[in-house]
Image (cartoon, one colour):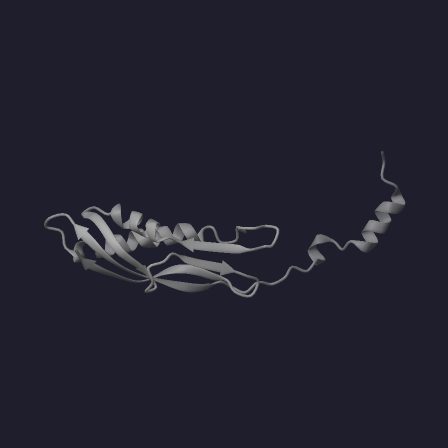
Length: 137
């Protein structure tokens, strides 16, 4: 079935071209610092100084993987965006570092809990690494 010329004309009059449609402006994302405190058990002969930077880098890589999900809605129907920072993932990242055999007492921003970052049209935050404080077991 062919579309009538009058319907095409009506649509052209009532529907603006895509380049003139307004798109709501969202605020630029701001960094949300994630501080990590943990107790690590190391193999014999290893020191905290030797694993401090590699653990920091591993945690930073995990947070980068979380940030890569920015802009992908958790619920497209409501345009809701949520990030989760999991203590278990922080532990997994640290355990992958050579010389680390255990990690306990993981705190994120001073709390023994995972972090949920809710994104809205007014608030946009991206998790970035803050201070990483390691204690020996």
